[in-house]
Amino acid sequence: MFKNSKLLTVLFALSLAASLFIFGAIGYYVYELRGLAKDGHWISKQVDRVEKRFLRHLDEEDQRFARNVFAERRPALRAAFIELRDARHDVGIAMRAEQPDAAQLTAAIDKSQHAADMVNKSVHGVLRDLAQGLSPEARAKIGQHLRDRHPLDHHDDDDHYEDHHDDDHD
Image 1 (tube, rainbow, N blue to C red):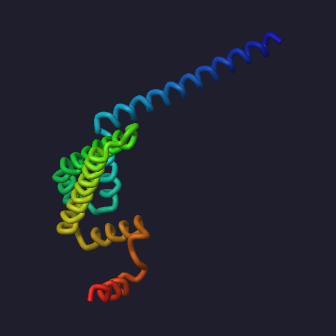
Image 2: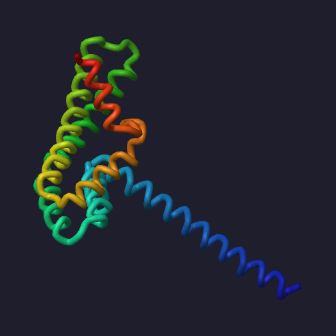
Image 3: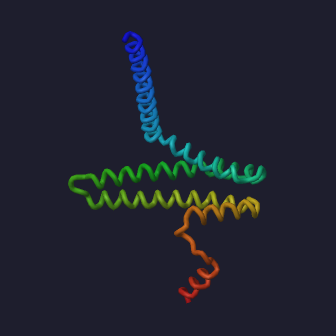
């Protein structure tokens, strides 16, 4: 009986230690994520993560060029994402109001739309700069990635789509 109670005590202590470790880790990561969301560093980390995933598909020369483009464009990207985060926060405040103020809500939504446009402009600026200096093979990889990533934004037969689409404007 004494051996079993000692074993149960050890198992209980191990279980308690594991539980405390898990809850501590969860608490730490929640605390870190809240801090990142407040100060905007998550935006820089996200841009860095996208850059790293992007660069791993390029050869050494294209990587050097792309790093320079990202370095040059990073401040504008970061500013655009921060503006979008702040604008969406303002929309949330306006939407949660007991009695919504139409002018405040319209201004917040307009600010959010402008911020989204700035994000798009910044991202497209990166793509434009990359397209002008990357090798044809790298551009083809980017084009295929964009096509694969956004399957609803393209047509299976792009040539047919362009011919048909041009007819709509005549």
